[in-house]
Image (cartoon, rainbow, N blue to C red; front, top):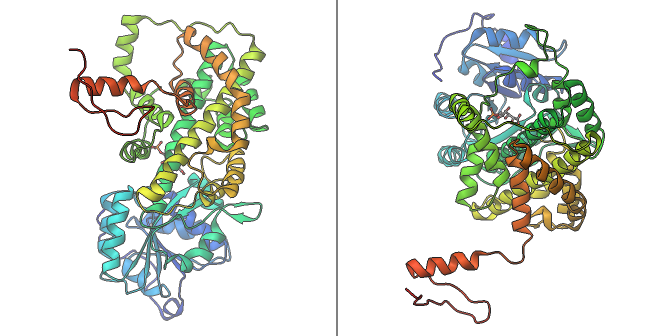
Length: 487
Ligand code: 6PG
């Protein structure tokens, strides 16, 4: 993003404005930046925003709540002059080069001790680099995840700040004020050292991808396999949202089925092309899970399915060649709905388990010191993956802060065990029906492997030693062994 030093046609700088000091500045007034800033103003903070697009700056002021102090400015210099020190300057601009460009434009203007916050979905390695770069210049840099979409930003997101611990006390009261609240507790907490804020947000998005994949599979099973209409699907998801599956994603899914199309007489969902987009955070989660390493197969599958969906033309050729005909699932409707409910519940727990296990490992492997208890606490409200289940996980981490995997918690184990049978039953019929259910299947494969005291990798060790003398350990004697196999 280039930031031309143009002057927005705004009332000229005057004494009255000069005497004002603003408490928080925002760079990038797209809908997320604008909403976040307006939210802050609604909580009594005097805020100031800048965007290189003058129409966005104007939209900021015109959409402010009456009685709040919201100012749009046409240059960064003006913003810097009007902010109280230490300055709190947040940016919500596209990840990558735009973030570096904003930082470079700020450097000649800011002073020691000022706090620069990146609230976008930046890759954590970029954040790590920026933290040290700005530390050298005696500036604070906070990589901060913000979740909740447009509405969340306006009414209360879940906020995941990390990085410079010295900066956090300065921004904590403001972030607590604007965040979502659950039982009166703010959905914001310090997520740990370095790039922890962006790392936690990345994994949040990985879990988001996985749950969305499961929801799409469950929709397919009930719709193509069980013959449920959009109205029936709406009812099923609505009811699920009132029970143990309560979550933001289930809630919006229920809504989606009733949305009419304004161009045809169909429901909109039936008119949307089956090609999923993505901005990369799911892929980043999978990539880093491989590096740690931590297995997150449901998230990996979700990323893969979005990619497969994008090969629409190839899929159509393959469909013509193999002619798979999705067969109806014979199970009675009520039973199918029950099995699907339990399968979704089971598999959703696996998504959180994998993401949280990844954070557990990153906390030490990447020296981020991520407090898992606080992660699940602040995910209970405001964010896209908020759900009733997070309350259960919060209890589990309060009992044991260092739990490596939530599947090891007795309370969680009880829930999982109750649903396992129906997931297996559902997958049997789904496999026969040819409806792809990779997310559900990999959740079970993960569970079966993770809960196996014995795995067949003794054979893999034998093969490695056979062809490459890679050695193996024995079950009965300590040490490392090699055999001259019979070849
Ligand atoms: C959130 C969302 C938000 C964004 C996703 C979309 O927490 O508010 O996760 O960050 O909507 O990044 O990601 P894809 O475009 O990759 O699906």
